[in-house]
Image (cartoon, rainbow, N blue to C red):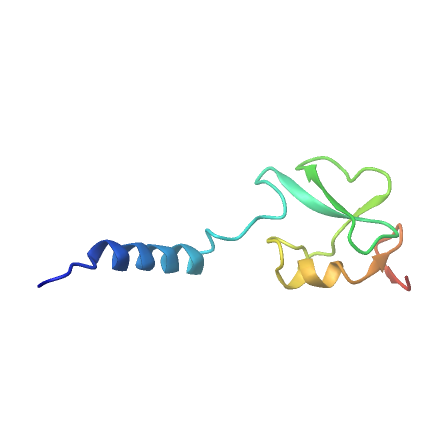
Length: 92
């Protein structure tokens, strides 16, 4: 008796390909927005349309330290610190 596992093997290969290609990661913001950090909060953040300044109470992340995907290195880091109105890390 011969069994065909081709559909299962193909589905598994597609799943691995999608995960390793980054398609399975949730973006912090949509493609036409950028993330900002809430002043005085460990976890507060929002998304601002490209070309607009952050609203009062929010600051931009430093260049090279912007979280791009939920749970990435910078998303995890910024959820553990508090910043002031200049974006400097402060006790909190």
